[in-house]
Length: 103
Image 1: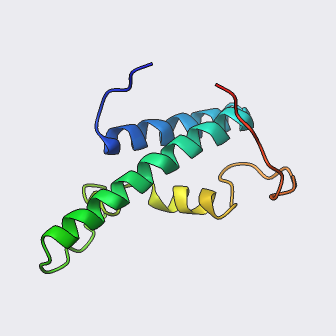
Image 2 (image 1 turned 120 degrees about the vertical axis):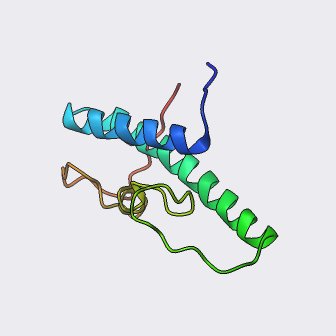
């Protein structure tokens, strides 16, 4: 399967797919999509850090509209998910439980 789009577009795509799966009650697919979104979120942060190191100038403030790639829209949702604070469901499952997703 070939993915098309920028890291920002793929991040937003997987974030929305995760939200949709959560809304549909499919927690396994939601987890998978949020993990994919997290991957692209980390890529965006790495790109922003590399750009900042290559061009050390005054820092830009986040405008709040999702246009700053160093702080993409949906960051709070991904950060909450990465910290084990699931968005949209709470089944009381053990957070330390390891899950393996086979593709």
